[in-house]
Length: 192
Image (cartoon, rainbow, N blue to C red; front, side, top):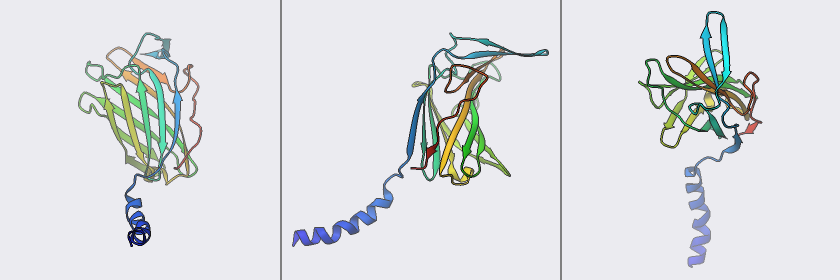
């Protein structure tokens, strides 16, 4: 009798519980070379870039991209994350998302007033909001972009930079490569 009940109720219980399980997501992991931050000096004669291999803030070390049906999550590990204490000091990640559908640009900016950052996603015809969380102890930033902002894509590719600004300079790391002026893209990350 117990076996009969288990055979009958098993599939019913599975059908009820399965929708409560977290959605699957496809994942891509990548690394960025260490000590490849560049200092940008803004001047009236144009921008001046200088290698700053000892600068830890904004030095990206690894990235994980997760793409589920409801969101794209970018998890970034840095050598060090902090919001420079000077007035106007900020830490940011910005870039582009290519998709099979809409595509978009995004930026996450953290400052003294918004230490966990604010995420804005820009696409044709408007903008929408994402979310972010920064763990300053573990040097990890997580950026979440709802797939509704991207037209519910089957795949995504990302290209992005990280930077911090103090009262004298902007410090940048062009993600996923040792160079600075070229753009590198993740491979396609299909929806999981």
